Length: 354
Ligand SMILES: [Fe+2]
Image (tube, rainbow, N blue to C red; front, side, top):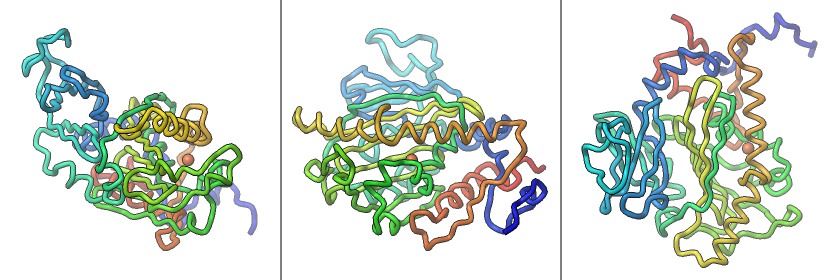
């Protein structure tokens, strides 16, 4: 094949693609805040972070300050713009702003939506995407043992993309040597309503990597040893179960080129001290800031973001791999951007077209 010149690169390809304008435009970002993040259910934290009365967590959804607190018998969430700042034990319904819909679902996550009249419950919104791990995360109470956050100069969707396409796994040396077997390539991407996808499991051979050990003994409940499931929840939440440890990622877009990502690691509440330490080690060895995998993803998406800044030449991001829904099939990407385009009322191939 002859080398492609600039003119050739600018031609429309005959396969599915989206425009890089989806990732770098202020107007698109503002629309996403209004039409996506203000409507969806957001998993803002985990119940184990606020077990006791008056414990609370805050976040921002679509630029609004949110607080969720434990009243003693339930969790209530509010817009955090009330007349008083949180102080002491005087909280009541007048302390904050408007009360928001809040549910605890899917392994104890605290879900909040800005939508005053949500048409779907959390279960309806997630549409079955958690079914594959429900028995593992809902049988025993979980507990957060790890939290860190990263502010990355990239678009939030690039983070979700990296959890949704697996050809980038070739970038991860650890994954290559421990995971690339026939079963890995047979994993299926399964789309669910509302833009969600999950990735079916396979068995990871941790012993293939020097210094790592089999993780079967501490597998989550009802999970065969050394499995690895992922749930990619629209528009930017990821749940990742690797046998003995569970991780969630939540994005808070700050602008078209800036995202806050919060990472949590979970064990079981009933863990002994020794079990917990082993889980923490398993978690950190892959997903901690000095692990074998997570920082590589962050470097990857920061680089992708740099190549797509506003002012760079518009380019096309191809989503054309069709491989029977197996691991490198881009069905998850196509599914996500179809839902994204629908909610924004734009065509992801030309999102700025009038
Ligand atoms: Fe990755």
